[in-house]
Amino acid sequence: MTTPPPPEDKKQDRVERLRDNLLSPTVDRKNKLGLLKKLVEHKGDVRVLPILREAAAAPANQSLLGYVVRSFGYLSGPEPLAELSPYVAHSSRVVVSNAVKALASIDRKEAVRLAMPVVRGANADTAVAAARVLAERCRAECHAQFVEMAQSPRGADRYAALLYLRF
Image (cartoon, rainbow, N blue to C red):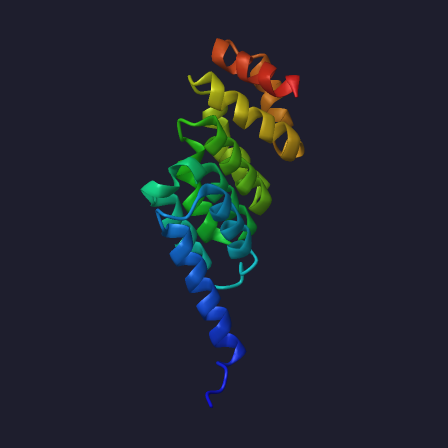
């Protein structure tokens, strides 16, 4: 008769199964969303960050990218911040919004620093998404910057300030 594996081995097997299913092109979107939720429950496991990185890069997960990016916000430390910074400049407003939300969950000042160029940028959709998240989650950290921008000679800065003040 075989003995069951120790609890740590079960946890390791569980995280590996989550990874395999999350990266699989045959698992459907709804199930992958559940897998992401289960994966972040193991946020203390050092394998979670690399798994999220892989999931974000997987072609089969592009329709879920915003959710994968948001999942980084459940982790802590400088590593997830570094992973999130490219997604703040993404062309999709959903991805940008979730990247700024994730950043704000970890470090609100860093969220403001990384999102302000997007708010001032040329893409109105992503600017609105970033401004909305900053208004909802980082108001104390960015309010003075937006008030200053409202009086800027640059039309793009005034527009960004109006977006922020609208929320």
